[in-house]
Amino acid sequence: MNFDLDEEQAEIRDTVRRFTESHITPYAETWDELNHFPREVYTLMAELGLMGMTTPEEYGGSALSRLSGALVYEELARGEMATSVGLSVQNMVAGSIARFGNAEQIQRWVTRLASGELLGAFSLSETASGSDAASLQCRAENQGNSYLLNGSKTWVTNGGEADVYLLMARTSAGKGASGISCFVIEKGTPGFSFGKTERKMGLHSSLSTASAMKARASKLPSLPWTAGVSILAQWPLASPRQPSTLPATMRESASNSAILSVHSRAFNLCSPTWP
Ligand SMILES: Cc1cc2nc3c(=O)[nH]c(=O)nc-3n(C[C@H](O)[C@H](O)[C@H](O)COP(=O)(O)OP(=O)(O)OC[C@H]3O[C@@H](n4cnc5c(N)ncnc54)[C@H](O)[C@@H]3O)c2cc1C
Image (cartoon, rainbow, N blue to C red; front, side, top):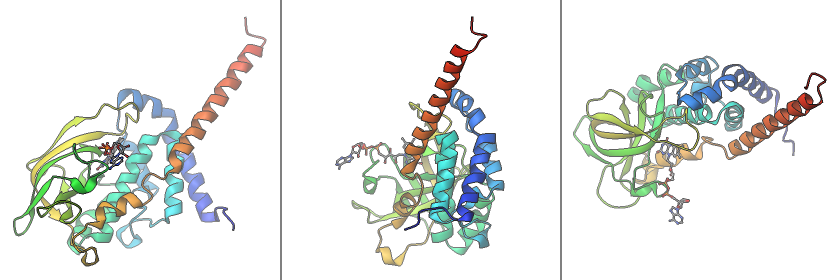
């Protein structure tokens, strides 16, 4: 079996590697120290087509394969994990609405997400439900033309910065995944607010924010074959959001930096200018 990258995959990897070396690596440490979310870099990534990697070309996306997407995330993570994570969330949101939204939702959000005009966030976790996502408590009440969301979320990557939130809430009483649906809510919607940003051990330039809502939202259509169980909560997470190779990429990048540092110290020690 041949595991070599084809020409297009190698081109994507090299392009993103050059991009990372120019626009991310030199600034990553400062962003991390200042907790700076580099929205400006997302505008540049949009020019490369990275904001719509999971979006069909007809909506302005670049419709990359999963392998190509994984290469993009890896190359970004060489410079900084946070931007790689933020971009993966953006693509989860754009790709999910493109795949599961109705015509109006697609027209309203997908092209603008793929072009980078809008930034997306994914909102599943709650204070009392992380791994056990099916026990989430946020409620959604059908009010005819729209749904009223009532609850709170936590750990929202891109939270507060993002314009469009893909959010899971419960439309019917009961436990388990049954009755969970997926909604889109925009920043600025009355009753939708943001709380504290988590203080983490690392990944400081990636925002992890809490949100609370008693606000109207648009529900993505039900999917008949799921019999009420939202696969949306699973599909984006199964997509190459955070490929398991990312930590390995970071480790490689860190060990390369360490080797360079050791070499330069060894060189300084041997240098004739050393006092
Ligand atoms: C940097 C960062 C970004 C994030 N971004 C997002 C985001 O954008 N959107 C979003 O919705 N969420 C996000 N999350 C939340 C993330 O998805 C949750 O942290 C994750 O689901 C784990 O949930 P938890 O932290 O509540 O841990 P818990 O669910 O409390 O789990 C703690 C530990 O217990 C283990 N465990 C849990 N249940 C069981 C069980 N039944 N049996 C055995 N072991 C068990 C888990 O494996 C884990 O090791 C983010 C988290 C982080 C740290």
